[in-house]
Length: 113
Image (cartoon, rainbow, N blue to C red; front, top):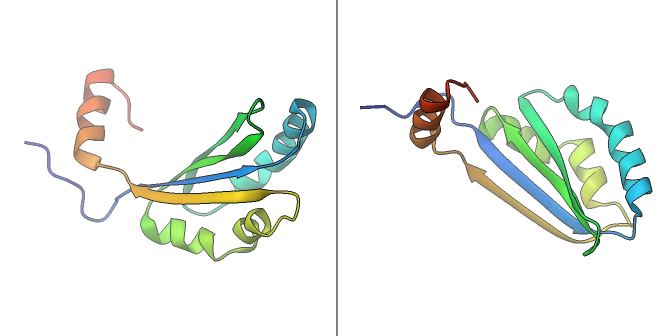
Protein backbone atom coordinates (compact mmCIF):
# COMPACT_ATOMS: atom_id res chain seq x y z
CA UNK A 1 0.00 0.00 0.00
CA UNK A 2 1.28 3.46 -0.92
CA UNK A 3 1.20 6.03 1.89
CA UNK A 4 0.63 9.73 1.27
CA UNK A 5 3.66 11.83 2.01
CA UNK A 6 2.83 14.04 5.00
CA UNK A 7 5.58 16.63 4.57
CA UNK A 8 5.78 17.04 0.81
CA UNK A 9 2.34 17.77 -0.62
CA UNK A 10 2.56 19.50 -3.96
CA UNK A 11 0.04 22.14 -4.93
CA UNK A 12 -1.24 23.43 -8.26
CA UNK A 13 -2.19 27.04 -8.85
CA UNK A 14 -4.17 28.07 -11.92
CA UNK A 15 -4.42 31.72 -12.92
CA UNK A 16 -6.52 32.65 -15.95
CA UNK A 17 -7.38 36.08 -17.31
CA UNK A 18 -8.56 37.74 -20.48
CA UNK A 19 -6.39 40.07 -22.55
CA UNK A 20 -6.25 41.48 -26.05
CA UNK A 21 -2.75 40.18 -26.82
CA UNK A 22 -1.96 38.88 -30.27
CA UNK A 23 -0.26 35.49 -30.49
CA UNK A 24 3.02 37.29 -31.27
CA UNK A 25 2.67 39.63 -28.29
CA UNK A 26 1.91 36.73 -25.98
CA UNK A 27 4.89 34.76 -27.29
CA UNK A 28 7.23 37.70 -26.72
CA UNK A 29 5.85 38.27 -23.22
CA UNK A 30 6.15 34.69 -21.99
CA UNK A 31 9.60 34.16 -23.49
CA UNK A 32 10.75 37.25 -21.63
CA UNK A 33 9.06 36.21 -18.39
CA UNK A 34 10.15 32.55 -18.35
CA UNK A 35 13.53 33.22 -16.65
CA UNK A 36 11.76 35.11 -13.84
CA UNK A 37 9.66 32.09 -12.96
CA UNK A 38 12.69 29.79 -13.00
CA UNK A 39 13.98 31.63 -9.92
CA UNK A 40 10.90 31.33 -7.70
CA UNK A 41 11.53 29.31 -4.55
CA UNK A 42 9.42 26.16 -4.37
CA UNK A 43 8.08 26.44 -7.92
CA UNK A 44 8.68 23.15 -9.70
CA UNK A 45 7.36 24.37 -13.05
CA UNK A 46 5.09 26.95 -14.62
CA UNK A 47 3.16 26.13 -17.77
CA UNK A 48 2.19 29.23 -19.75
CA UNK A 49 -1.31 28.55 -21.06
CA UNK A 50 -3.40 30.29 -23.70
CA UNK A 51 -6.45 30.17 -25.92
CA UNK A 52 -5.97 32.87 -28.54
CA UNK A 53 -9.48 32.44 -29.97
CA UNK A 54 -11.09 33.19 -26.60
CA UNK A 55 -8.39 35.71 -25.59
CA UNK A 56 -7.75 33.72 -22.40
CA UNK A 57 -4.25 33.43 -20.98
CA UNK A 58 -2.57 32.44 -17.76
CA UNK A 59 -0.48 29.87 -16.03
CA UNK A 60 -0.55 26.48 -14.38
CA UNK A 61 1.99 26.40 -11.56
CA UNK A 62 3.26 23.30 -9.76
CA UNK A 63 4.62 24.10 -6.30
CA UNK A 64 6.55 21.83 -3.93
CA UNK A 65 4.21 22.71 -1.07
CA UNK A 66 1.28 24.84 0.03
CA UNK A 67 3.72 27.05 1.91
CA UNK A 68 5.68 27.77 -1.28
CA UNK A 69 2.46 28.52 -3.16
CA UNK A 70 1.19 30.80 -0.39
CA UNK A 71 4.51 32.66 -0.32
CA UNK A 72 4.26 33.22 -4.08
CA UNK A 73 0.69 34.54 -3.72
CA UNK A 74 1.81 37.38 -1.42
CA UNK A 75 4.78 38.34 -3.60
CA UNK A 76 5.42 41.00 -6.20
CA UNK A 77 5.24 38.72 -9.25
CA UNK A 78 1.79 37.38 -8.33
CA UNK A 79 0.53 40.87 -7.57
CA UNK A 80 1.84 42.17 -10.90
CA UNK A 81 -0.31 39.56 -12.66
CA UNK A 82 -3.44 40.28 -10.63
CA UNK A 83 -3.00 44.09 -10.75
CA UNK A 84 -2.10 44.36 -14.45
CA UNK A 85 -4.58 46.89 -15.90
CA UNK A 86 -4.39 45.23 -19.34
CA UNK A 87 -5.73 41.93 -17.98
CA UNK A 88 -9.23 41.30 -16.61
CA UNK A 89 -11.63 38.61 -15.43
CA UNK A 90 -9.00 36.88 -13.31
CA UNK A 91 -9.80 33.39 -12.12
CA UNK A 92 -7.47 32.00 -9.45
CA UNK A 93 -7.79 28.45 -8.16
CA UNK A 94 -5.45 26.25 -6.15
CA UNK A 95 -5.47 22.53 -5.53
CA UNK A 96 -3.52 19.97 -3.56
CA UNK A 97 -2.03 17.16 -5.65
CA UNK A 98 -3.14 13.67 -4.59
CA UNK A 99 0.26 12.19 -3.81
CA UNK A 100 -0.86 8.56 -3.69
CA UNK A 101 -2.48 8.49 -7.12
CA UNK A 102 0.41 10.44 -8.60
CA UNK A 103 2.92 8.02 -7.11
CA UNK A 104 1.08 5.04 -8.67
CA UNK A 105 1.20 6.69 -12.10
CA UNK A 106 4.87 7.60 -11.68
CA UNK A 107 5.79 4.01 -10.83
CA UNK A 108 3.89 2.68 -13.83
CA UNK A 109 5.46 5.25 -16.16
CA UNK A 110 8.91 5.05 -14.61
CA UNK A 111 8.93 8.80 -13.89
CA UNK A 112 9.21 10.98 -10.81
CA UNK A 113 7.03 14.07 -11.31
